[in-house]
View: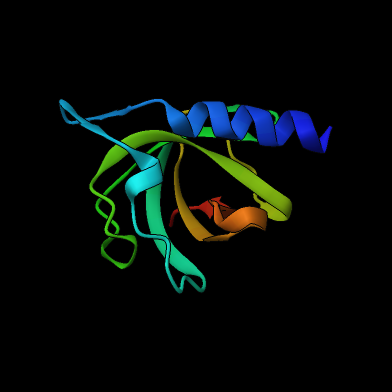
Length: 108
């Protein structure tokens, strides 16, 4: 299961992400020294451990606003969330240094 998750993550992150008409390469974005980054997002879908969402710019990661897939990290705290919800996210580096969702709760 872990190998399948890592393979899926690599395939998803290797493809360009469409954000406001621009393509961004997730692999080239800065993930250095990340420790619990918080942001808002709108959820489009949740499929197992993969969350498709749109987030505003995240300056701490040097990420522009974009729509992307992010993985839920092992043991992630997830509130009662469904497609269309606005949420608060806590992001952090998972195994291998990839950014994932540590917690996702409804925005208030």
